Every structure is written in structure tokens, then in C-alpha cells.
Image (cartoon, rainbow, N blue to C red; front, top):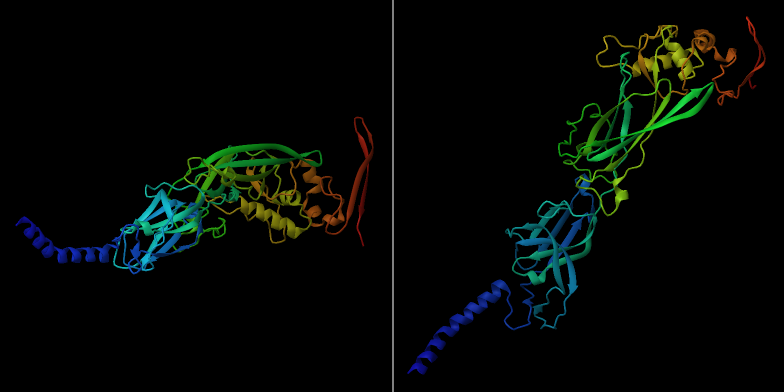
Length: 452
């Protein structure tokens, strides 16, 4: 009796079991026979595109990863992985062969829900799902579909994270500060956020009538890393309107990603040497606390040297030197127009925001610049040609308005170049004999040769 009952039960449930297995195969792709793959119609094959496959997270760069499924939508996990060859047995032609590799997950970099479409997209900024930035390097990408993990897609060595060296500081300038009691000036510039600035000042000084190298001074300070930068540069002050589009190398320009966001202003007070030309330059190195610091390639954390900013700190004496004399000496003006241009440039360069009246009213319409420079004013002279302090004798003998405006009619001063490279004129002055005494005598020969 029990045998007949069991036989009847098997006959009753066999159609239902067969239907259930068919539905399971149809929906999940689970093979019926051991070792068989998924039906080609149902296989989770993928097409993967990465653009760009070489990107720079330090400046907001990312890789846009796109893929699609042939069978149906899948929730997807994106991984940085390693691959190991996987031996596969031949399958009947109606079955899809699994991916011929075992994968080992190194980093999980994202996940995408299933959705209703078979086309997917993910923007990767170089971080894993915990927010940790991956080191610079080239990685293998794996696209893993939920429910068909053995049929993952991959791109060997398909994506590279790279962060170029930071740019050198730019727009280095020295703020004017004329206050007699303050011999300190502020040096300003811009740099990439999260860097250590090395500021170098090489001096040129005058010894006798010669221009010779002076001291070299080095200062270091940090520009902190923060995320306060704005695309419109509203976090900047004096540099906000300066061109930034070419400041960073290989910058990923987008409407939502502007160079200003990664720029920071810096300022450093320095007491510049009086009457010496300061050749100011700077370099940077990414801080070790900067998340984009490259520990494997330390040289990629360092910039080159910036362009040189050249200034001279001039302290006005108590014997009423005039603006024209400054242009005559420091800019080697040899005409009235050059003197006027140089004097007004010096005045413009020393205008401060709270000045009641501009300083540029230092010359008259006949190009005379005889207004005196106030005693002990600290002036910044940009791009001077000569270092040195102007003596009262030099002012009286060589830097009068008449001699500056008609330089070629008079012997050149001792501090002037003996050969005028523009005209070929040659000046020579030599003292042949000096007689000491209560009234010393000096016999000097002067030759001024003008080329035809």
C-alpha cells in the first residue's frame, strides 16, 4: 500500500518540480548539469569603457566608467582587483563560458544599484568606498554583476592614477610699505594648497663701483591643505582676477572644476637689505599630510623654481634726493622721457591703498622730476638695473636733471657700463695722479668715444 502511495505522490509532484526548475534556470541562469555554464542568452557579459583611463585626482580629475549587460540589469560592484588564470573545461556551444580568471579584490571602489536599464555609468575620483585615496599607479578594473559573479568583466591595467608635480609659486610680489619705522616688507604669492614653500632671496650689492653677489637667505613656511576653495575664486583676495587657466599642468578643466579652487595665497614678512637688489624666487613641496603626497615617487612632490622677482629697498636720506635721480641711477635713465617714466613708475609701485594722494605727481609737464623723496621713506624699486646707495656727491655730479636728460653730452658716471650696448659708445675715466695735502689735487682723464 505504501509503495503505491509513494508512486502516486511522485507522479503528482513531478510536473510541478520540473516547472520550478525551468523557471529557476530561466531567471537565475544556474546550470542544471555540474560544470556547465550559463545559457548564452542569459549570460552577464559586459562591455566596458573608461574615459579618460589616465587621470589626476589631485586637481579633481576622475575616470568615467561605462558598461552594459546583454542579459538583464544587475546591481554591480566595482573593484580594483588582481587576476589569476582559471582553468575551464569545454562546454556545449549553447552555454556561456565563465570569465577565464579568478579575481582577488584589492579595493572596492563603488557600487551601483540594479535599476531598470542595462547601461551603467560610474565616476571614479581615485578613492575606495571608505574615502581613502589610492596610491598613484596603474590598476586592473573588475565589474562584478550581482547574481552572476563568475561572469565579471575586467580591463587589465585599464586605469592609471597619476598626480603631476605641483607648479612653482607664481605672481610673487613685494607690498609697498613706506613707513619710516617699519623696515619690513611683505612678500606675497600663490601656490598649490597643502605645500611647503621655500623662499630664496639672493642679493646683489655695490662695492665701490662694482656690482657683486651678496648674501643668500632662505625661508620656509606652509600653505595648509583645506577644501575651502571655490571655482569662482571668491576665497582669494589680491590674486582673484589674475589668470589661472594655465597654472596647473594637465588640469582637467570643467565647468564645475576651475584651477582657482586649488590655489591658495601666501604672505611672508621679510626685512630686505637696504640698497641691495633682492632676487626673490620660490619652490614648493607637497606636505606629507597632504592626501595627494606621493610616498613612492618623492620627486613628484616637488616643483621647480619660480620666475625671479627683482626688487631693491631704498631708504630716503635726509638731504632731499629727488625722484628723477632715483630713475637716473636705478633705471639708468639717459633722457628726460626715460627719467619721467622711471620716476613715475617708482611712485606708482609704492602707492598703498590708504594713500590720501597718489604719489605719481612727482614730475612736471616739462619732464622734470625734482620733487624730493620724504626722509626715511622705505621705497620698493621694481627691476632695478643697479644696486647701491646714491651718495650726495653722485647726486650732485652725475644725477642732475641736466645730466640725466642729456646723458650722451657728458662723461658717464663711474657706475655706468663703459660700453653702451645699444649705441656702441665707449666711456673711459682714469685717475693718473693724486696729490695729498691740505688741498688735495687729483688729475683724471676722461674719454668719451661715440661710434659713427
